[in-house]
Structures are given as structure tokens and as C-alpha cells.
Length: 85
Image (cartoon, rainbow, N blue to C red; front, side, top):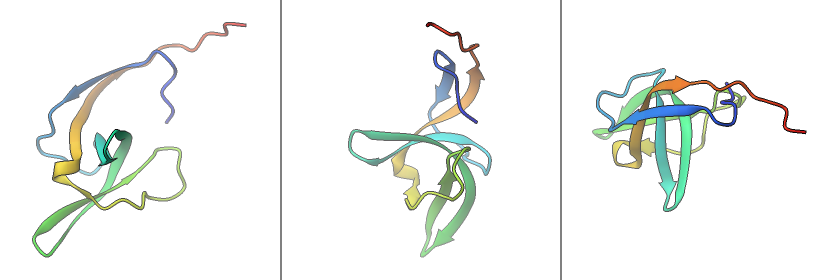
């Protein structure tokens, strides 16, 4: 799902991330990504979150861990796109 320009999102600190939640994570310094969690799995006692953009055909290549997740999106106010031309 694309968010129209001007849409507002309400974020909280991540608590109990579940499949289907939209998160903001930082795979690199100064690079944030807002994608949906599509799978959660554990390897060697580390929890990983598989993410995917709603309009992408495949999951992200990032191995997202809890420390990379900065926010969880809990609400979105969609704005109607207007033609400014």
C-alpha cells in the first residue's frame, strides 16, 4: 500500500512486534525503512524479523534484529491526494 503524500503516521516505541506490524528500522546509519513484518524466526537465540514493502514482490534482504527497530506504526491517517497542476 502506498501512503499518499501528507498522510500522518502515529509511531510508538516497539513492544511486542508481530507478523503484520509496520515498523521503522535502520539497516544502516541515517537510512530508515518503513516496511511490514512478514515473518519472525530465531537463529542461535537471536530473533530476526523478515520485512517486505507492501508494493514489493519479494521480501527485503536485511536480517532485521530488535536493536534495528526504532518504531512501530500503530495508526495512519490517510490524506486524499490532490492534483496541484
